[in-house]
Length: 125
Picture 1 (cartoon, rainbow, N blue to C red):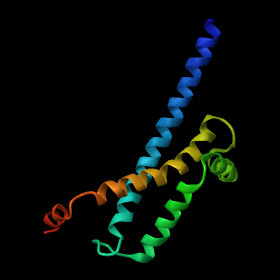
Picture 2 (picture 1 turned 180 degrees about the vertical axis):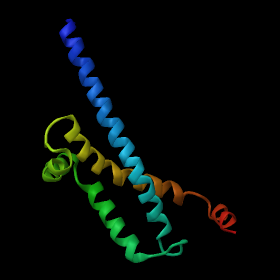
Picture 3 (picture 1 turned 135 degrees about the vertical axis):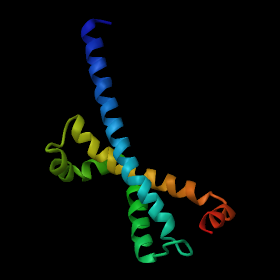
Picture 4 (picture 1 turned 90 degrees about the vertical axis):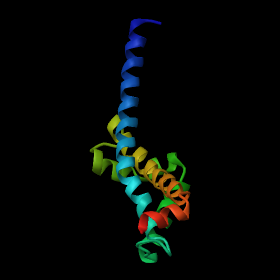
């Protein structure tokens, strides 16, 4: 391959790593607390609150069910507000992050639910 192609490939690799790193960091920063909140506000849990849990669960499930390409197009106005543009590397971070947050939250919620009940009781006492 020519040096120009290698340069383009390295530039594109850097942009991809930038998008993945930023969207992953934001998704973790928002998704982990959201997943914890989904667990602790369930009925019978430490901060049981159906008024908080039900709407959050609906939002998470709704965003998870939307195909990414449709989500990306649907939130173009929001992307313009946040990133200042709707195209480019920085603009791609917005839909990537919005799509990743519910998946992160659901993984955290599922992981916490798999903790044995006896272990939770021991920690609470």
